[in-house]
Length: 295
Image (cartoon, rainbow, N blue to C red; front, side):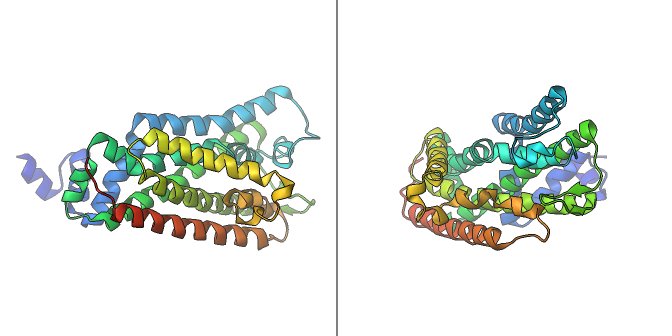
């Protein structure tokens, strides 16, 4: 039986069936799936995800080896020995300032600048995709990567935490307890909340990526902007600016471990992230729409 016949009767090899499903999908979906396959199979991105996953493992092992019962440390880290679920929360706090933003910045900086640098941007625009659809697909892939990267840190943190410290009912900040299942639900909300913030940073990165043909330069610029926002957030004389900084609201996910959940700061954080995402995606669209693509 030929390969074509096997495809027709559904007995083709798994890899061939996957390719057939992708090729039969609508054009925008094919474009998105192709972009995601490129992102999640590129070696440098896989290595970056490996670093993200290593942080909760190193954190849990360090706490276990130190045999420290807590006291005097950050709230999440102080609770790790009581319940392994807090490894996930603590790892998110540790990776919040640099590691996760850097991972997102790498993808966002490469979105358009990487295509221009490799000489494939003009080719992409010759197919019936269009500049607007191209930017939509690029941004959708950034959002999906943001969710996946944040979820990876949380999942690895939960697994290694349960292995080394066990689980059970989770004690919240002010002494009340919730079930382990309810705490997992709150962790999932924390992942989605942080991913929304990183997606907004990705929109900023997409805009920067349309300004240059050097993806490394775009990535560095995004990281510097992220660090600058964190620095400005620590300067008390700039307290008038703090509510407008994207990073100012990221740590508000800790309110999920209060009973009842305090939603005020998280709501403002989501609104801020939404404004950043819309403004900078539109800026990227305006820039890219008038850009003379020569490579």
